Length: 189
Image (cartoon, rainbow, N blue to C red; front, side, top):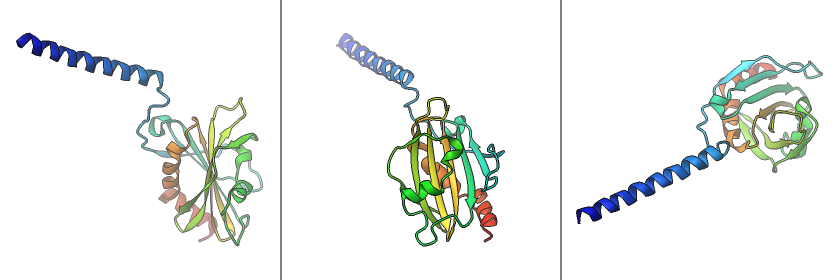
């Protein structure tokens, strides 16, 4: 009887060990797929682009250690550039007001856009895959939201091809004090 219990205990231990080894092997082989805990810490950085008709914007960075991959958010206000009647209500308007040209010129939309709300402003978000092989970034999220005829455009550059993992954190950041204070001052509210 005692040897039978020992055999059963050893069988359970062996099964558990085998399961743990299989799980560890899968995680090692699929490290980029395994989910990480995202605790964004946003730091303002210098605007990296040349000045154009829209001027300098604000730039923020979240390190890979905090966001699972490096995430850069570039914000600009475009005064009087939004459809005053409908705002940023569709993907066509989102792309028209966007700053995609700051990042590159070859993109493929990953999906249809979705409505977003940033404080009192409504807008739209949509993710894209970069198709230029010479760029180190893999995907972009566009977010644009307006106050009457003025629009704020956020271009979010990611180091991986899973924008859905970070999009809600970006929207939360856009609804935060740093961005909203800047938006109010920039829009003259």
